Amino acid sequence: MAPLAASQAATFSDTIAQRTLACTACHGQQGRAGPDGYYPRLAGKPAGYLYNQLINFREGRRHYDLMTGLIDPLTESYLLEIAQHFAALDVPYSAPAPVKVSPQALRRGEQLALKGDASRQLPACVQCHGQTLTGVQPATPGLLGLPRDYINGQLGAWQTGQRRAIAPDCMASIAKRLSADDLASVSGWLASQPLPVSTRPSSALPAALPMDCGSAPVPMGPRP
Image 1 (cartoon, rainbow, N blue to C red):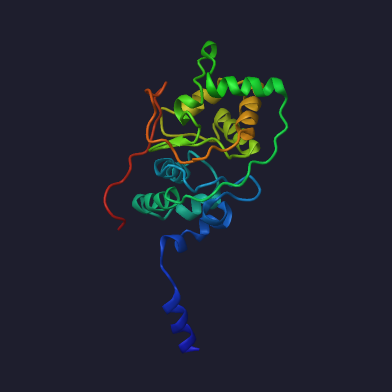
Image 2 (spheres, rainbow, N blue to C red):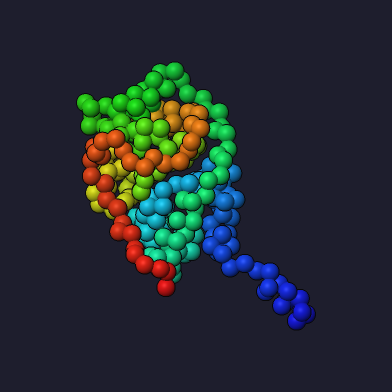
């Protein structure tokens, strides 16, 4: 058995892709998303966003015991390395699943996503998530290619405090201003949109953010 063990050791590649197989077991091959819509895509998301979510899970602002157990012993530098690995992956999206949404809900969802609702202090999604809604560097995620149920679930979690971010928690403020109909409309519209040719995050926004949003400081230096 010794020669076989030596052969296996010689062919094992200790890479970040190998180490993150625990992530892709749920989030899909190369972080393309899980098949059930519950585990979102990681590939191509801004590294700052992914890093912030790992920190949020570890510090209790997001709740999923399996995630917390996996990342709790890891250093901030290692979490950043994981985030940067998935952010660098440029792999195709799956075709969006068909979504049944009424014409009225689609119109309202489009208004909220592209124009917002100033009467209720609701900024447009594009003001933070980019004109193509594919996210913005360094820490704002894209909203396209996500299942409607996932978007519904995350907005609902912000409304109830089950999902939080480092203060000031801008998404919690926005979500709590959405009515149930607004939430369903915007999630339905986003989930029904075709993906653009380029799904990479924009490098910057054309204007300042409409409100302040908190973010975890990114560690400097190599992973110990």
